[in-house]
Structures are given as C-alpha cells and as structure tokens.
Image 1 (cartoon, rainbow, N blue to C red):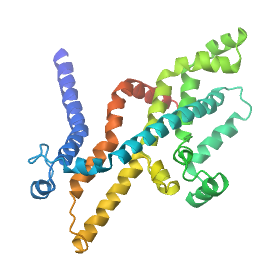
Image 2 (image 1 turned 90 degrees about the horizontal axis):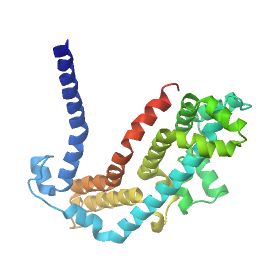
Image 3 (image 1 turned 90 degrees about the vertical axis):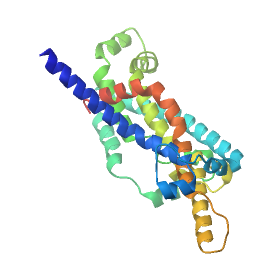
Image 4 (image 1 turned 180 degrees about the vertical axis):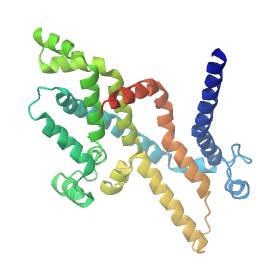
Length: 292
C-alpha cells in the first residue's frame, strides 16, 4: 500500500513538473528572443539561449525613455486608483446581495447576472462616455468604461460572503448595537481577506493589461498608458517596415525582437507582484466559486 501511494505521489510530481515547464518555458523563450539579434532569429529561429546577444530592441524602446516612464506612471496610477474604486464598489454591491433579508434581493441578483449576457454595445457606450459624460482625454477614460464593475467579481464575492461568514457572528454584532457599516468594515472585510485580495488581483490585472480604453477614448500623448504606448510603437515599427520594403525608407528595425521586448516590458511588473498574492488568489478563487 505504501509502495502504491509513493508511486502515485511520484507520478503526480512528474505531471506537475511537466505542467510547470509548459507554463515557464514559453516565457523563458520570450525573454531569450527579446535579447537575440534579428539576424539570429531569422537564421536559427527561437532558442532558449540567445546565440548572439543583442539589446537593440530595448535600446529602441528606451529611446523615448520619458514617454516609457510616463506610460508606466499612468498605468500604475490607473491600476491603483481603479482597483481601489472597483474593490469598494464591488464590496458595497456584493455584501447586501449576500444578506437574505434584503428586499428585492433576487431582482438585483438577476440585474447583475443580466449584464454578463448583454450590454449596450460599443457605439452607445462611446456616445455616452464622450458626449454626455465628457471623459475623453482624461484619466477617467482609462478607469471608468467597462472596467470599474465586473458582474463575475460581484457574484464571486457575494458567494464568499454568504457561504463563509457565519450568520451568528453578524447577528451577535447587530444585537450589540453595531450598525451595518460597522459590521461591514470591522467584521465582514477583516474576515474576507482571501476574496478581497483575489478580486483586487483580478481587477488590477485587467486594468494593467487594458489598452482598448486608451485606443477608444485617448488621443493625447500625455495620457497614454504603457500598454497603449507599446501598441503605438508596434504600429510605428510596422509602418517603417512597410516603407522600407517599398523603398521609401532606408531605416531597418529588429521588429521581431522588439515585439518580444514589448511583451516582456508589459508583463514584467505583474510577474514581480503576483508571487506575493498567489496563496490568497488560489484560496479566494476556490472558496468564492464553490457554491456559485
């Protein structure tokens, strides 16, 4: 019996190592490709170790280092502010939905679920944000449209509240004279750390990776987030490449390695932050989704 268990444990470890390798190796390939010269990529293809180390892709990106720095600042500001606002609104929406004595609870729950299936569409949304709320070319254009509230996060947080917070604790606090706001801030939120960090990480990742809002609502350089800025750089490279192939320009750029460098720069801050929240993320996802 012990031999059988050890065999299955070893087999499980081998499977997990293979899965880890499947996740890690593409990223190592990405970094190696960003550090390789364009010529070696054409001749040798993608390799896990650059045959000819070349930093020209990063040099090109950091030619406009002020723009890159400003893009990182804008992205960080939008991510932090948007995540905090989203976390507050999601909590204020999800907690009442988790209380069984809320009048119209089913209606509001259906209202949230309905938005997961249908929305107003891009054109009405654009008209509303730009002509009625006038947020175009402001920092709010990167925060408010499409990202501030997510129905999936509301449902997941509501499920966590209703499944993991003992009703007796809340009733006891209420009998001691605590108001709803006091119960929420001093009892519910401190007992809900895993789901709070999970939603925080999900929303933060969405804000950091978003570039559609910048594409739709931002036309001034000073409001470009890092994702929008890198997208613009890639488009400029494509234009230079087409002009060069047509003979209109003699300038050549390492377009493949630049694409890889852009991907590395976009994902690097998330890779630095993610390990600190991983244990809460896994726990929050599991507990919040069990009884959805």
